[in-house]
Amino acid sequence: MLIDSIGFGIVLPVLPSLIVELGQVSLADASRIGGYMLAVYAVTHFFAGPVIGSLSDRFGRRRVLLASLGCFGIDYALMAAAPSLSWLFAGRAIAGIAGATYGPANAVIADVTPPEKRGAAFGLLGAAFGGGFILGPAIGGLLADFGSRAPFLAAASLAFFNMGLIVAFMPETLPEERRRPFDWKRANAIGAFAPLFQSRGATALLAGALVWQIAHMVYPSTWTFFAEIALGWDAKAVGWSLAASGLAMMFAQVALIRPAIKHFGEERTVLIGLVSGALVFGGYVFARQDWQIYTLIGAGALTGLVFPSVNALLSSRVDVSNQGALQGGMASLASVAAIVGPLTMTQALAFGAERGQPGSAFILASTLCCITFCIFLFGVGHRRRQLA
Image (cartoon, rainbow, N blue to C red; front, side, top):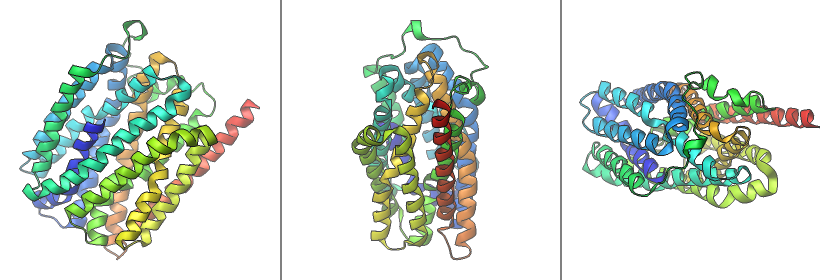
């Protein structure tokens, strides 16, 4: 996951300039196109995620991870050679099909970790993702000196290198006796969550997770555009800010998630992260100085507590043979957020930027955090009343 997220993070600082170059459009229009690209990725990922997750329950995690990473390598190479915007859209579609690596990787964690320790373990996986965001954008900003295509070539090389590491060092974590037959009824978002619907409070958890992920899409869908429009940053400055964000995420998921869950429990840890998100997103609306931005990035570390805690709560509600399907379903849930989030966030950014308020996307994100907080607060209270 570390190497995979490095490859993803490398390309972020140069994506706006590549869209402007190929599409001959303004930066505000490029932000809209970037949102459409993320939506294409999310639509294909929505349908592919549960299929990939169920395949990992049938054939094992290792084979699925290898196939996905191979497709990622092809995708980045395709984008490096893209002569037009249509090629970039095609590359995003391929990546959406292959982008279920996070689901099988989470299933690996569930395979080898007892339920009471999964929150911290999911946090470590999130920390690996955050570590990639420390290195990836920083490297991408430096590689931008060699042209907007160079980071894509580097990302393709990393994906194929990652395949080699899995072949050499990663064992299969799902033994034959724990595998289940592939079932198309489970290979979709509704079927993947079927084992959860019998669990008390799961509906609120899923609804809250969806709204939270839509809010959190403000970062990948608008940050590079926001930084250039509102702050006047170049690709290097954007890369360093994304690296700082990754460092904050990594710190939270390595150093904070375990003691937070131990002291507050998983449910309250989710609520703490949501309060932080609402305040930090609101802060970006007004921040225009570099020190203010980096202060908010540091404070935003607490938002990294949300998803590992939610994932641990849901994972504890299904058995071993359905972990891959669950994580595939979570990937589809993320895909719904990645369809709705970029389309709404980039439109909000463009609408606000044209009227002198480029922070408008963060107003929307902060509002969604408040809604998520209310959903979780209601869900936690309802579940406790049922158990009483």
